[in-house]
Amino acid sequence: MTKAGQNHIFESWLKEYKLLLFKVVRAYAFTADDQDDLFQDIALQVWRSVPNFRREAAVSTWLYRIALNTAIKWSRKERKHHDGRNTIEHTTHILIENADLPDERLEWLYTEISKLNEIDRSLTLLLLDGFSYREMSQMLGISESNVGVKINRIKKLLIAKSGKYDYHGI
Amino acid sequence: MITMEFDDIKKIWDSQDHRPLYAIDERALHKRIVAKKNRSRHIANKSEIILMVTNLLAPTLILIIDKIKDNGNYFSYILATLMVATAGFILYSRMQRKRTENQFNRSMLGDLDHAIANAIYQVRLSYIMRWYMAPVVLLCFLSVWDKEISIPLILFMAVFFTAAFFAGTWEHRWYTRRKQSLEALREKLIHEEMI
Image (tube, rainbow over all chains, first blue to last red; front, side):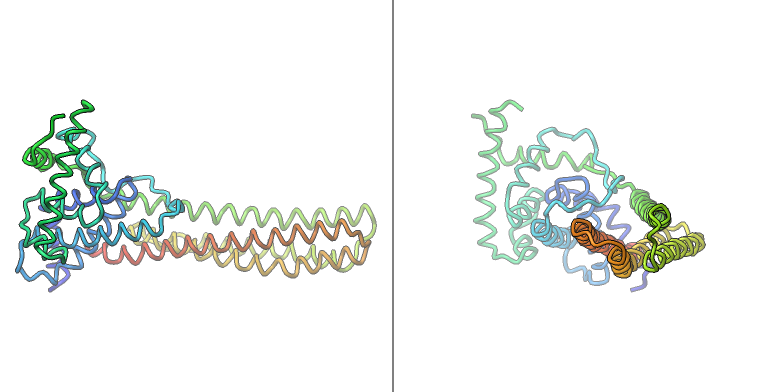
């Protein structure tokens, strides 16, 4: 594949599926600087992955797999090295957050997702975006039955948490 | 307690499909790199000026004190000469650095290369200055030794130079880490430039 071809595919993927990448960034990184860093890492991995894409899966599945794996690795690395010495002078941000959320409850939902462990967070994103257990199992390398058990638990948890959300009248 | 159904949660999730959470500022990365370049230039400028002023002021004071007390010796004269020569060397390095500033283009990679060049310069300067301390310390002690041996003065000098050495080591490491982070960003950018 030529560099021009790779760039063209990357640009079209970024244009069409950026929302998917944003969801992963939002679920795994919580400050503007971290969101920038993670987005850069994911974009870089997606660009590198273009020549390896074999059309055996949908592009969205392929991108989700890359984005989630990058985010999980990034998250583990960040946790390991986070010692307050991140003093890079980020004066401007690559990702500009939209001030008005389409639904104010979305903030609550992301907060609840962020409290889950890395694998459960990935499963929640995939579940909410309508992926099948089989696809989730392939993407995350865990058995379908295990996916089923975890999804069941996550659903129950989110439903229970939604009660508390409503109770506080937010 | 009222709970949502999972379908309601899904609807909340889907609401972001019509209005993305973020917009991408494509110029932001360049702005960030320009800020890094300006900062590295600012650091180099400040270090040069501080070092030049120090290396001119200290020998002037040494010579004035020697003249007043009329107890100058070879060591203090050698020390003063060394410091003035060092100030001259820093001035020459500064001119060389300034001369190369226009060689970098104004692309993202060019600005980053400029920032890295300044960072390398800074690392080299801090390295030289750390070793430069050795003859300065030696000459200081010899010049004092030759005049009058005062234990409190010797102790003060020992503490002062030890602290200066550790501060210099810390400073050198800080510049090295900064240079490495810029080089790592360049590695990333080489790929992203192709994007």
